[in-house]
Image (tube, rainbow, N blue to C red; front, side, top):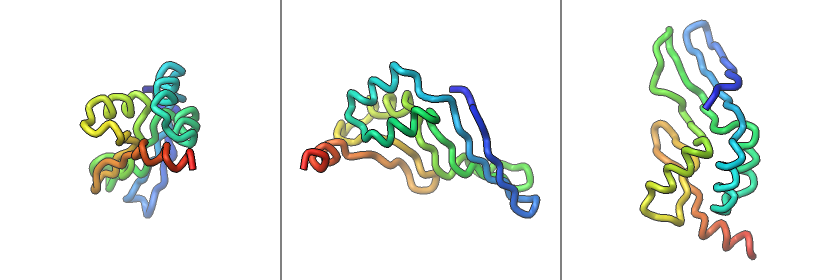
Length: 114
């Protein structure tokens, strides 16, 4: 996965927060995610940036544990889904201090039909 762009925000010269964007998702991975019936908005985001690291923080040159929120790349979503026990849940992102967030695809499909 190639980094496309990084936005850095510097506060008081000591705290640095970065947002990292990546190249768009490859077509083969996008097609696999479409087959999983992920929401269009997820596919649309990944077509702009294949994953996203939000608020990678640094204090006086020392990294503080990676991004606060990491939106998975298409391949990471597929890998995490293949590893998951509950196939109704599709992992899409990781909050550093809280854990993984998933879409309950069964419930999503039910609401889409209604």
